[in-house]
Image 1: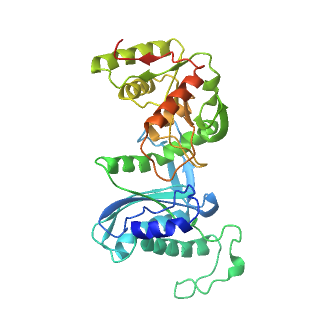
Image 2: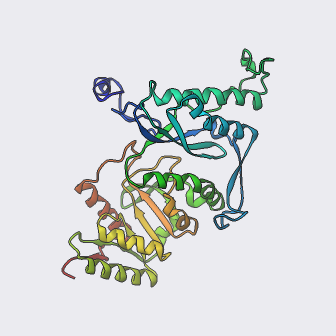
Length: 352
């Protein structure tokens, strides 16, 4: 849908609802681009394989977390890598099978005659045939093709294999492709960590602090700690002053204070990053809301698993991230102050 068509239809569409399945307005999905695709099994059933390995095993070891594919999972993997055979203008860059979903990276190398969604539709259709044969046990014709479907054998609760739609990300910045590849490779380990520490990775809604409701991921017991310190640094700090602020805040954190901040300014970001690297407890306020399936960023997984990290989101999940405004920044700093007891006890300014 182009922007003109979107603008024409928007008044009749009703209020926007958060969704991770919506296509980008104004993008044709046929031109030369790289896409990260995510598809989930209908009902989140673990049909594609099982998680094996140890969450604490080092990378590259025999016990490193991995997904052992089921027979259906193997067929799904084969169909994904066969996309290039059916569509030579599309190459498969990466693939990661998970028990109840998959991630894959596709590179559209040349202008396509059809929408990317048609390629995903064809992939779903071919894997649905394997699903009917392997899971629903519907017989195939002598030629090997699935015969006329006996709908009485269908799974009435879940329908076919895949949930409706798919999620996509379009490659934008330098270095993003390598981050995507690392994300896919690390998926089994993150699942293993979540299963080992389920409470720290489950989104909790309706946590009220100072009259503000938050959604939370991480160790909520950090909120009851008696010593919490707001991290707020002026944007006008010099490099030397930011370095001094980092040392000052880390010294207080090592003495027992839990640092709290939305990490907006460069100084605040440096403080929180240094504290994270030093394995100190943190409470981070994010302007980007959570949905039921939200997870912490990969850089926060270890901290969440060890119970030293909490992410609080005061606002609802949105389909696209919007730029931070000054009122939003002021509101987030005010919330951090409320969490710390109402006083801006940790502020670094250029005059210090």
